[in-house]
Each structure stands twice: as structure tokens, then as C-alpha cells.
Amino acid sequence: MINAANNSSNDSNNRISWPEPASDPSNSSMHNLPNMATVSRTTDACDWRAAAGTTVSTPVLTTTTTTTSSTDTTTMSSTAEPALMHELPSDLKFHIFQQLPHTALFDRSLFALACTSMRWRADVKAFLTPERACIGFGDKPFHKEGLALWQAESKKLYEQTPILKEDFRQSRGLIEQACTPWSSAEVIWPSISQLAGIEINFREIRDISSVIKIVEKCHDQTIKFSTAGVRRHRFLQDVLPVLSKIPAGCRVVLDASYNDLQPQDLLPLVKFMKANPCIVQLDLSGNVLCHKYRICMPIVELFQTPSPLSHLYLANTHFNDETAAEISKALSNNPCLRHLDLQRNMLNEDGAVELIGAVGSSNWKGEVHTNTVLTALRLQGNDYGYHNVTIFWATEQAHKLIVKAKPDCDTHPYIIQVDTTSGAIDEFLPGYDTYTHQFDKEAEAEKL
Image (cartoon, rainbow, N blue to C red; front, side, top):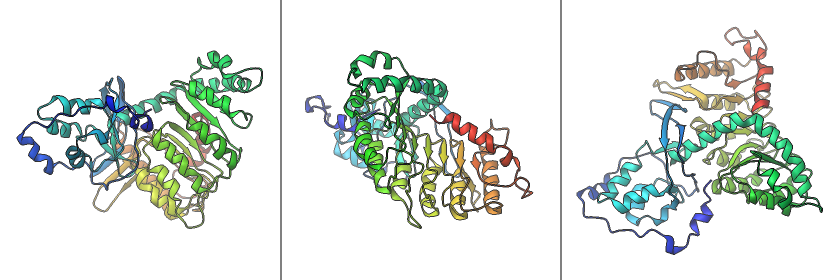
């Protein structure tokens, strides 16, 4: 993954020398650029990894019938190094990129257009057509190639889950051995380097310096941080510093459940995810992150941060209606999140309906929105109660829209999981009770 800090510190001798723009009538069109998206300027840092010769899927976002999905396939290749946007000519930066995050990274193919073409302004404009940029995570514009790579890695990770679980088991003993006085990271590294994934169990390990040495040696591996129950002080003092050492190209599974974390403790975590978007599964269950009727802004920022996060666990966090309303837009067009666990929280009818509508909804104008990326929205055990007709109706309507949006979906999808008693409401499928055990089984199989 691209590390923004490393790119910003490049030696000045390596910077691109920009040619003066050729006299070209097309340059006058700079003031009449087609609007790629109507968004406000943001200062959030969004990082994208360079795509490298792989066939992957990208999301489709339309206007009247909006579907966040993975249906279009494109083949991309790039051997270019990323470059910072502030290296662009100021006029080009102002007119073309004023709606993009100011620290956005693009590969050198963009710069090649500017350096080699007599019509470089027009060519760069063409480069940023909707085929190359899209909107997601709320109203964030981002590079489609980076997103395509995230989606490809998510699919690969899902397929590797059984192998990764076995590698995690094997690595635990090796890493604990490396942290003993009679061994070292160098001794056990040849064995660890052969594994697709490693697990660092902070409940058993106190030697943080040895852990950092191991982490810094990792390359293109999935690293699981098992920190459940280590409590807040250790998470902030030990876990976050090790997390900051994750090399580019690695993926992270972070279990930070039941650590008495507070809402403000999410801020350094979100900041890390912006600088190095490598967390693919995040478990924050059991931490009280919402209070009464207040919006948890760190959770909102987490949902609005472009990242490859595919599984997010927020059970028993006091997640409330107010926060649900704030994250519903970002959830509705999140092109990466596949599993969201909000079980046993404080959601009432209004909050649950907001989240269900983010999966599938239509309005009085006949405009339809569906999110076909999400495969599980777990809402069981909340305050909306059993036999809630409004919840059941919204769930069924969302599922019907999903079926229409996915031509390959010939069965009831059961994406949204809510509470019910079998047969209590005639219009609601009693299968939800029948499938409760299956829901839990599938969730456990996916979780690393």
C-alpha cells in the first residue's frame, strides 16, 4: 500500500520537470470542465495503491438507479511510481483537482500525459473521466484503479481464509519464541516468511521491540493483531505504535474488542487508516463508543474514510440511531465493506430503517438505490424489538430491490438479519428463524 509520508519526502532531484503548456485552443476549455462529482473540497488524506496487471471488478454508480456493485471488469497495468498532486502545475491543480483530496496520489501515467502531449490539459481531463474516478464512502471521489485492487485483494483474502487461519495458528508459537531471551526475530524469520499470514497475540507477548522487528520484515503477508482484552492503556501504548510499522503491501486484521476503548481512541486509528489503508477486518465490539443520543463522530469518520475494510464488527458498542443516520450515506455507496455487525446495540426503529435503506431503497420519484457489495448487515438484538412490522417491511423491500439489481441472484438474499419469531407476521418470511444458526456459522467462517 502507498505510504503518503514516504512519497512526500522524496528528494527534490527526483521531481518531475514540468514543461510549459503548449499554445492550444483546448486550453481555454479549462474553465468549462465537466463536473465529475458534486462534492465539497476536503482535506482528508486518501491513498491508493498502484494497480499491477490484474483483472478485477469495479463498482457501478449511477444516478436514477444507483447501484454500488462489482459488475464491470477492467484490466489494468502500471509499473509507475505514485506522485503527489502538489507537483502538478498550479492552474491544472486548481481547475481539475479542486474537488479531489489535496493529498491524493495518482500514478505516473497521469504525469506522462502532461509531459509528452501537446494537448496535455485536455488529455489529463480525459484521464479523469468517470471511467477512472468514482464516488464512494459518502461523497469521496477516488481513483478507480486503487479501488479495483482493494476489491481484488478482498476476494483473494476471502478465498484464503482457511489457509490464513492455519498459518495464524502456526505463527503464534514461533513469534512467542522470538520474544524469549534465548531466541530472536532473526532466528525464527525463515519459518515465518513462508507463511501467508502471521498472528501477533498481544495477550501473551510483552516484548514490543521484537514484535516490531518481525513486523518490519513482513512483505505481502496478512498480519493479525490479537489485542482483545489487553485493555485501553496497552492498546494505545503498545499496539498502535506497532501498527504504525506495518510495511506497504501487507494486510491487517485487527481485533481490538473489549478493551474499554473510548470514542476519541478511534481518532489515531482512523488517522493511521488514512495514511496506510491496510486494515481489512476490524473488530471494535465490546467498547462503549456511543453515548446516549450523541453522534459518535469518530465512527462516522471511520465509515467516510476510503479503505479496503471488508469486515467491521461493532456489536455491543451502544451504537445508536443518531450515529446510524450519519453513516447511512457512506454505507450506501461503500464499495468495499461486505460484512457489518451491529448486533446487541441501542438501535430503535428509526436507526434500523436508515441502515436498511442504505442497502436498498426507493423514493417517491421512482429512484432506486441498492448496495450489492454488502453481503451481511447484522441487526439482531437491538432495541427495535421483535414483531416490528416497519422493520420487517423495510427489510423485505430492500431484499426485493437487491434481487432485481443482481441478475445472478435467483434466491432470497438474506443480507439484512433482524429479529423475529417464526410465523408471527404473515408477510415476513419465517426463514429468518430457520437461518439464524446459518447466519452465525457463515459469520464465524469469514472472520479471521
